Structure formats: structure tokens, C-alpha cells
Image (cartoon, rainbow, N blue to C red; front, side, top):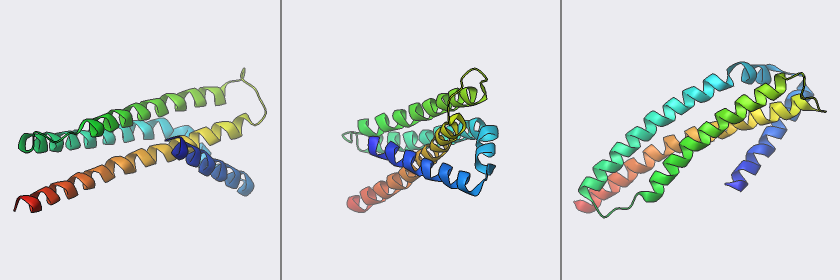
Length: 148
């Protein structure tokens, strides 16, 4: 997890430096205006997807009661918690960015880096959740093949 977060920070830094070099505020203006709404939408999508996954896990457990999904369930909970933390981080960053009291060198760039990081991280969470649907489908297909 630390390795992934570090990678996302590096990617975010590259994006921020690239945008500064290109003198483009498009991404940062978009993130400032829309990131909280986007994160709430992604949280809703993730919650619905995790509900689907949970129902499929329940189906598998009813057929194969000795299967252990405790790790999967923990990862699902962690995913939701990560998204809530990202929303809180976004709110705090936007408040700091807009504050006339909190002043320091490169405040805008630091804020943009954090907002870009949050976007990248949330996309990764969405990808991971979506990918888990396919993993479950593949596992169910494998179970069906073994039963035949």
C-alpha cells in the first residue's frame, strides 16, 4: 500500500509539474470545482458494486459453506474507508487552498498535487472494485467447471 501511495504521489507530481510547465490550469480548475462531487459519485458506484459482490459472496457461501471470504470482506471495508478518507482530505485541501490565513510558499502547487493524488487514488479504487467483479465471475466459472 505504501508503495502504491508513493507511486501515485510521484505521478501526481509529474502531472502538476507538467501542467505548470504547459501553463495550464484546466485540470486544477476542474478538480477544485468538481472533485468532491466526483468522489461522492465514485463512492456511490463503489458501494453499489460492493453490494453486488457481497450478494455473490453470499451465494457462494450458501453452496460452499467452508469458503473463507474474511480477507475479501476486509478489503471491501478498507476500500470504503479509503474513499471516505479521500473525501475528507479533499475538503481539507480545498479549505486550505482557499484560506487567506494559511500562507506558505507553493501552497497552490501543494494543493494541486494533493487533489491530483486524490483523483488518481480514487480511480485506482474504482478500477480495483470493478476488477473484483470479474475475479468473482472467473472464480464462479472455475467452481462450475470443477463441479461438472
